[in-house]
Image (cartoon, rainbow, N blue to C red; front, top):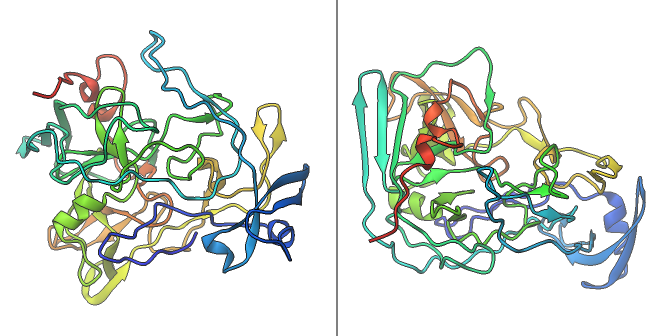
Length: 369
């Protein structure tokens, strides 16, 4: 995927398509932007329109025309979660439209972080100190509301025998009390299975603001991508190692974008941390419940881990020494490229982050004063 320049955190893009097949480029030779095009894929001819994509190096590429997708907000069916919406989009342009973050917080941000026995206890009202977008909006029908978060994470986390995938829950929480939530509950044809849409692929417009955040049905404001406003307030800069920005559910620290070239050697210089995930080559399977089309980052399953292709491991982390942990620790990094927010835990995640009836994370939401 295209690398975007870090320009005071104002120009960070969430992600862009990483793989464009040759047939998509050939289909637009000698055509103009917006022209109709047809390309050959393994499952036959696909119609689309020519577009100038960031990763096509100035060439036009044939992008399949989007089929309509249901835009109505899912309502709770009584089973604890809203019914899945039926989407049919199979390719996307990698651009998530954002709502300008011009709205002042609805109230003061309240965060308390303390060590209590073996636990680091994080209590917060889920309100950021930075400005947000306008909610509700066209892509997100929910209003920001004050939350009552109380999370316990291990104060001395340990690496587990094997990583644990992040399910549909928050990966962790920022120092400002706003959660990091990498996933979207959106599936191809509404089937809750393999083909879950990547939240920031642009396939489904989610009404996120300039912080790549939007609002849950219960009023919880949460980040799906690089939390621009938070990083600005914390002074993240390419000139120095990232400051601590939050805590993962397994207790390990979260940093963003920049670290030491040699994770354990502060004198090794500052470099951008890079993901080791790549978009798969070729085409997806095609069937009654399979989307077909080519792998491009529209779906989470379009990506695979390629060990050593970036500076980080399969959980977007590494062993480091940092200003906060001079003796060393495992740490996660948010990256510009997918997964942006990690998709697995290196340690054992706290049950406090699990979603479901009676769960601590989703109890006690209250209306704003």
